[in-house]
Amino acid sequence: MIEQPIMVRIFDITKESPGVKTLFFKSKLNFEPGQFIMVWIPLLDEKPFTISYFQEELAGISVLKKGLFTNALHNMKKGDKLGIRGPYGRGFSIPKTLNSCVVGGGIGMASLATLTERLGNVTIVQGTKTASEIIYRERFKNMNICTEDGSIGFKGTTVDLFAELLKKQSFQRVYACGPEKMMYRIFELCNSRCIECEVSLDRYIKCGFGVCGQCDCSGQRICIDGPVFPSNELSNMKDFGKTLILKNGKRAYC
Amino acid sequence: MPKIDLSINLCNIKLANPTILASGILGTTKALLKRVVENGVGAVTIKSVSTEPREGHKNPTVITFEGGMLNAVGYSNPGVDAAAIEFASIEDVGAPVIASVIGTQKEDFVQVIKRLSKSKFSAIEIPLSCPHTPGFGMLAEQGTPQATFDITSAVRKVTKLPLFVKISPNIPEICTVAKAAEDAGADAITAVNSMGPGMVINIEAQKPVLSFKVGGVTGDALRPIAIRCVYDIYKAVKIPIIGVGGISTGRHAIEMIMAGASAIGIGTGIYYRGIDVFKKVCEEMTQWMQENGFYSINSIVGIAHD
Image 1 (cartoon, rainbow over the protein chains, first blue to last red):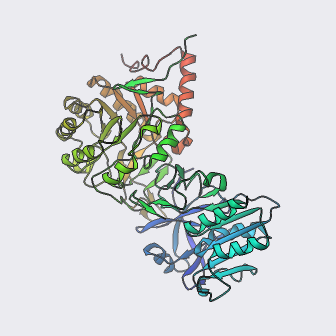
Image 2 (cartoon, helix red, strand yellow):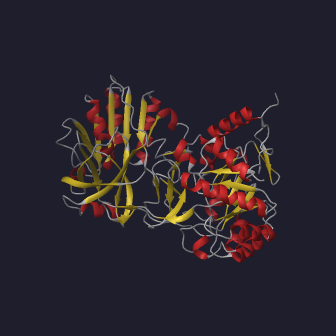
């Protein structure tokens, strides 16, 4: 496979929340939930995004406005061109008949969106800081919502809400994506109850296909060995929940 | 039938087989070095370290094309102080670890090597030949015979470890550069670095794809050039050569060794065949040697020469 961006035109743009827009484009990607693509704006930069919508020939990325690059994406109009390459990495495993739960923290929900659709009957937990940040409310009607300020739903974090749910029911598998500290605590909660857990990790990514070593997490390359890792592998990844590697190769705390 | 032995002795470093992880590929952390060792490599090279942290170029930094890979990572690295911590205890990596050291002037090389001296590196490599990072290598004219001699001499004074000098395929007088390194006290020549720089333009975007616009070419396109360079250098110097450039199969490795390489570096081969490319190359070499009646690497080195 030739690892180079192909240009796609933005077909549609929807607003998910004040800070999140979804950009749709036509594409015949061979995409599995949990995988990611590299999105290129010529002369600016290239960053990894999960595909948050995937129907027939239309794919979408949900973008949280965060820095220079995501700002540029937010300023794009219908018909503007983007470069995409991929999809890359190992996605979520999707067993046929398991009682599962997805836990999305903030924009992490975007990684879980196509998985949630694929799973069908699944418990959904979404948490943000405040009500206006909740995304996909129309798309997923039965979400268990929580906010840190209590402005909607349960007052507390996704970890708090997930722990509450566990008091009443159990799951055979839990999928989580969000801040790494959150994912680590979900992983711990699952471990203590012998629930299989898969999380999608985030690191600074350069090549996307496993040669540059930028996205290392304890010897695992997030871009090709992950980004999704199951509990048994996470247990051996000492950096998970603790340190990550910055663009310049320096270690920092998660 | 005698047993096939892939082990080599490179400048008094014992390698279980002649494959070496080339610098700039996966050498960012100790954990990744270990992972590569689990995949059968003979020795590993860390990602090049400079005195100060460097962010490198913006993405896209690494792309591929029909003939191989194009990269302009731009020497991103955490700087020597953080690298000294990351690679503080490399004894348990499981194979010899080579430190790749870069600098914008010879004092930088000296400083980095001194500050890494507490780690148990098996050798030092100085790439004087990067084609795409301002201030370093070709863009700082470190690859001329005179500069190669000066930097190698300066480094030679501060380390007793085996010293490898990595040179560029781009220069017509490649043998003069190799000879300059040998004269200055290098223990081996690593040949070659990426060639070019090259450029890929996305015609729909109407712009070069790499953010730095140009990048070093590696992979299949580089291999015949690397083979020729090693062939020429083998005649010019007495010290061993680590042949690097487009090797991803056992046959490529044998070809490079026949050209005169005592060991072979693999980088882009990971893109072609995965992280276990080292294991695959070794198995293929063993099989070829079995079929063709060779029992040691040494007996193949340079046999393509008249």
